[in-house]
Image (cartoon, rainbow over all chains, first blue to last red; front, side):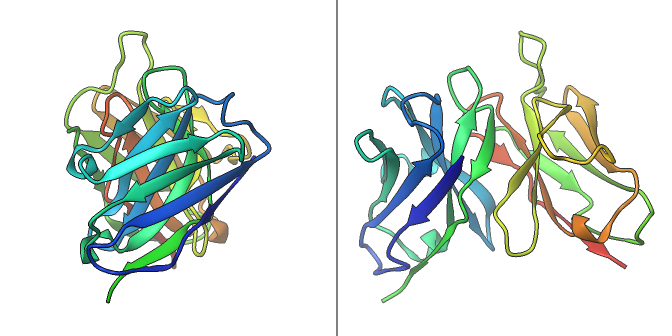
Length: 121
Length: 112
């Protein structure tokens, strides 16, 4: 199973960050959860949220008003949308497959290689 | 939110010597089903994080048996029996008992 993030690299302040995670070797309709995690120098690893194979979502509260995660079944990929970005959203963004059987991911395996996003004018 | 606190924040180990990293959760990670919803990850230089242990002490595929994970309730430990050069990286713990899923701050392992 391989995951591959794609995104713009640079986003202007107050703009919208859109990332896509392409999945190969697994179907997003089979596995229960698909997640986004980011790594920044100031905050370490931060779970952003996840989408289930049925389309339900869980989000981290501080980001909930700005984030949306969705599935694209036809392309076997899932996406992250983060609005009104600021410098605090500068980070490496990872997508990951969430494993387990409960109401959210129990563990992440595998992870994508990550994509660096800088918020700057 | 459940707060995960790792210690030490960094350690430098001679190859062949053991190493130990601990992680404390702000509340018990024991689920009513008997599993501990706790994982260990490592991020090696230039790579993305990779799973080491899941649901407490279940070793992920491909993880050498010189790594062991133990603990219960709120306190967990990752031990490396004999450190090798390839073990360099940042080690993270994570709780998955409830959302938001939260990580420890990370422990940087260096080789002397």
